[in-house]
Length: 159
Image (cartoon, rainbow, N blue to C red; front, side):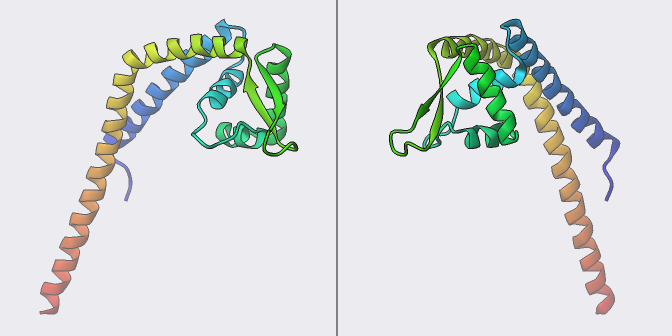
């Protein structure tokens, strides 16, 4: 079954709202001298789920980057004094990436700006997501109702 024009519009609006937020985020990062992926790496380190270690592999997974690309981002951030590498206490072979004081302070400034933006833009983003999901649920409900009618029709014809 195809999508309705309303569903396309709901998905497009949601995508537009995501892009507005991402544009804001990219501009904020650049205003501090960071590339957007560098900001994302700092945030990925600070925001790792409990129990996850800030290794190159884990950060690569979180950012959906190849290992070597993450290494290069870490190298550039280390050169700026925003991250540092350290050996794991549990396994000396394991290298962990940590924010420096400067990196943590910069990330904090960016995170505060993002939180403020989400307090305003987040409402519209949430509305757009809800509309896209609502259209999707209506389509699924319509498919179920159609299938039930077809099934009932088949039972009636068989009798």
